Length: 335
Ligand code: NDP
Image (cartoon, rainbow, N blue to C red):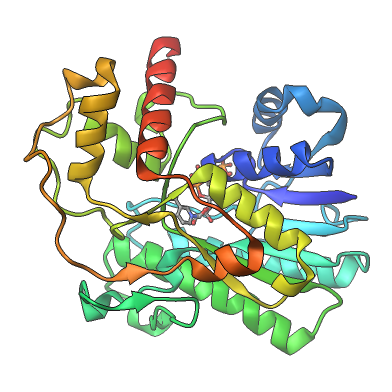
């Protein structure tokens, strides 16, 4: 069975690609350029016989995926801009939404064999940050970020990113309701995601947003321990997120569902404490902060639906932190 995967050049998409390849699927990765295609081949060189590439230069164009979807059984869509630099809607919200809808439309029109679509959404589509840190509140899949497109004309880059994920996921569900295609949709909502890096990394200054967030804690650029992460105080491990996509893809009961794929709450202080006690090479540069100091009481995010319905299990913060750090040290050596 061939699965079309978008975002394979990225941090999470590369792990999703690996998870499907390792499970025996044929993967067709949609990338933007020939150079990107070579990089994806090199990341998954072990599975070269099961991997094919197709070039989709601009995912926002109507019909962009018309040939990419041909004869595929399923689709995992993870390509979407993730950064906090956007100044305008058109830089981040538009590609998130139109990348999603153009893909669904191509599948609907040109690939009657498509049965399942899994979309990488985000905790950003669930949190309502206008309510603050909400101590005592537990977010679940029933919650939605209440943002609307017309409230965004003067929005800051963080709000624009959060909105891009909420509005793209909403557009996907609306498409399903309006068109009632022959495939089902499931969305996976990770929090800020750390973990090993398997995709091609050009330079340490070009790390993807969530890994860059982690790396500044260990490379000495962050002299003091920051109080809060940009989006949440909840993390995900990239391997658990990839597994969530696979399990959701394979579970008939996951059709029509959204799943939070989150490992647990954390504070930056816990990350630096783990780094300093477990990763010798990081000790010198990592900020000390106030060892053992607990983070503030904030909202919680439940992962019980993914545990009970998908059978997902989650790594601990210590596992994630240590393995992310060792991988960054490996990359430092190479680059
Ligand atoms: P990366 O930046 O590592 O990867 C983003 C991927 O999306 C790349 O493959 C990139 O392709 C592609 N992409 C971005 N913008 C465009 C565009 N305009 N047109 C075509 N392709 C594009 O990010 P992550 O792996 O972290 O993010 C992957 C997904 O996971 C996103 O949907 C993100 O919102 C979501 N997510 C990420 C979290 C995290 O903490 N990392 C948390 C929650 C959700 P190219 O290489 O060509 O630029």
